[in-house]
Length: 258
Ligand code: 6PG
Image (cartoon, rainbow, N blue to C red; front, top):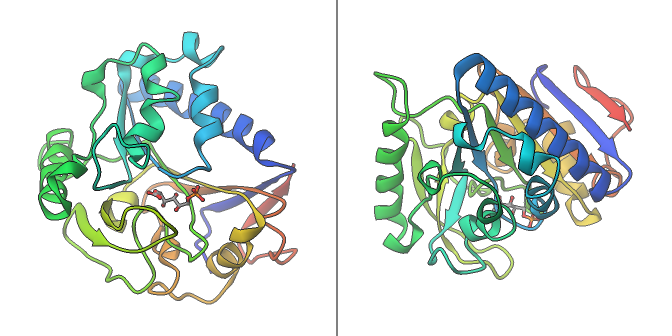
């Protein structure tokens, strides 16, 4: 079961969901820039956010968003070269970031090519460089997450330890045919975000989603349950296929069927 600052929005299909995600991204970005002069976002890899990334590279977002004040980070990365299609960086840069007026210096890539341990240490230094004084990592305005069929999110996999006191963790995990060596933000960093948005689509995610949002608290088995922001909210954007095993009502969680 999840905390009360959680909402679930169900859409007929992934395209409609991605339109809402693009609107939400834009609103969060404009609000953060207006309030704090910058928008810090940590992106997710995988296939689900591809439609969102493509939309953000097109009108009206390409013209409207304040790209010079948007700073791109990553929730996790696979330890491959940045031009490898399996790289989370590549999966955002190729369809989107390479097509908008975002300065390259505003992209904080996890340098997976260093190998998991070195890349994790390197990224922790990078996060500290963008943190407020005395902090080890910034409070992200948005952390975008997906959910694996096995219940993982970012590169926090079932059975993994809940590392505390550090910003990043080196991971080795087999999931589908994706690179096993990875780096991930830890739950503590994610939970300092002002807003966390999960995007989950497809029937193959239905069981993991239902167990995560409506099942008993099992933080080791369902790592996405570790996402409980201290100062912000969690918005689940899901399609009807992924929602197919959800109960009609879930205590303390608003469910909107769009
Ligand atoms: C990654 C992602 C990962 C992803 C899920 C869902 O590096 O793979 O960060 O957490 O969000 O595996 O992936 P799909 O969107 O491809 O189903």
